[in-house]
Amino acid sequence: MFSLSTGSSRVSLGAALGASLLLAACSSGSDSSGSANNTAAAAQYSQPMKVGELSGFSTPESALFDAERDVWYISNINGVPNDLDNNGFISRVSGDLGTVDTQFIAAGKNGVTLNGPKGMALVGDTLWVADINTVRGFNVTTGSEVASIAVDGAVFLNDIALAADGSLYISDTGIRFSAEGMAHPGPDRIFKLVGREVFEALRFEGEPGPNGLAFGADGKLIIVPFASATISAWEAGSSAADSIAAGPGGFDGVLTLPDGRVLVSSWSDSTVHTLSNGTLTPLIRNVPAPADFGFDASRGNLAIPLFEVGRLEVWSVVAQ
Image (tube, rainbow, N blue to C red; front, side):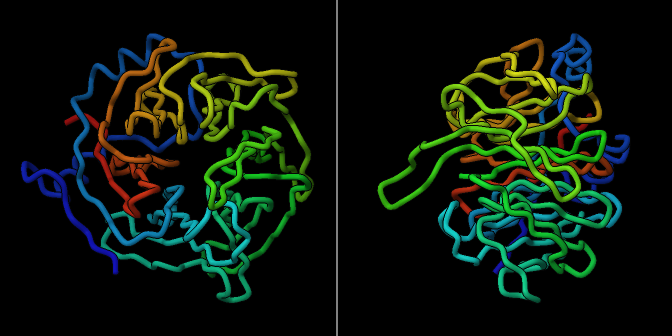
């Protein structure tokens, strides 16, 4: 059973959402430059406000907003993150949070296979999903599976970023879960999917556990790691990624808001941070296990899946 509750009594959900219409359309990716413009833009904004939450999810890992259809897609692992158990599902939630289709795309429904869905990317009417060792494509109108691309040797496919040329980059965190806990056998990599062909684009030395991915304004791929404290940026074709910031580690989500602010989530301190000039500054605290968040530019809302508590929190992060 899903339940909706609104945030602070100081403002109604409708009023908070209406005020956020001032924002322009959302851009994908993250700005790795950490320029002074980010700081100036952030200074125009007051503290974020929680405007609502939905409970009833099952290990929610990623939130992605579809502006054309005014809906959220929420991936639900529904079990052990790397088990090939074919019981994952993707929920569809209306932009105003009023309607929830819990199992819009679900394992065993209409012939769908879905094990542990995590990061997502939308290309036209196809929703691409990282699913442990496979990248799957689903039609966002019918929910039917339209593509299934096995990634040879993949250990833990995690996030997906859409490049300007239409190719997809997928992180492999290189971790496994069992009754004994988490292990990190590696290798830690970034794969690239072009059309229906996939290949290894970057392999890391050591075990950073690459997790969240997003492209910056300069075209470099921002990589936030789960098993390291170092955030990096990588230029496609180069042999290694460059460090751009350090923080608490346990990183998961990363994106750039239309106003230029770069946001990064961390499990280590249960916080969503703003990244600017190589420094992380807390923006939203006390969000346990904040996973791969998404942004609705029309309302100025950030949706944060709370992995361990089965909840989606929605925060207004626009000027008040």
